[in-house]
Length: 206
Image 1 (cartoon, rainbow, N blue to C red):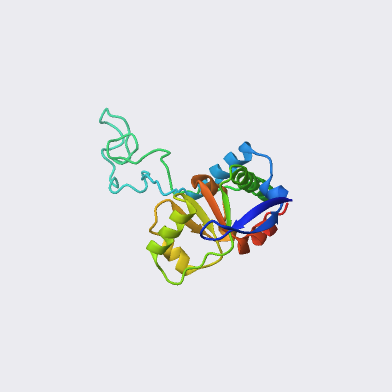
Image 2 (cartoon, rainbow, N blue to C red; image 1 turned 90 degrees about the horizontal axis):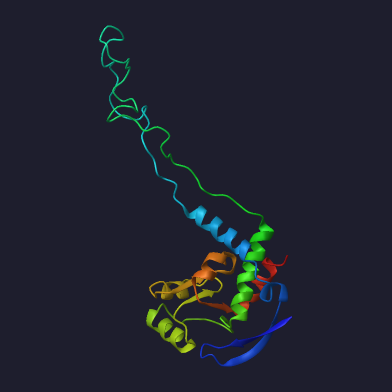
């Protein structure tokens, strides 16, 4: 079991806690991290690109000329893909790019990134994080005291905290169940409240 310091909002040490080696001291698995990030980005794709086929293009109901006797090639519609203003052949249509990888692989990738944050001393565990009211300036000063300008904060549901942080660039608040590889890589520091550690360790037990 690894030992991690617990600090207050002034970054003074107040306690120590034991954390699981399988989660916070796991080996780096770059291939799994790549796979998970690729999967997350694929799920975020809107997939709304669309082109009109000959069936969707307006007009073209009348046969341009008679079938025989004109010396020209046969034509049944002026909206043929071969004609200007016609439909598109094999163009993109609305679709989902979403796919999934095994749950165990996702957990291992998440443990790899959490362990890397711990090794790089970019993991900060707070004893508690509570705000008396919705105040962006108060939260900004607290982050400045902690020496953080780019951080992912993981805490239990707290609408006051979430609303106080949402206008601060480079800072995001997540709940323990929403912890993911992409956001961990996107933000430099990881801040977790002590109450969330057990929940994270329980959900990532493999």
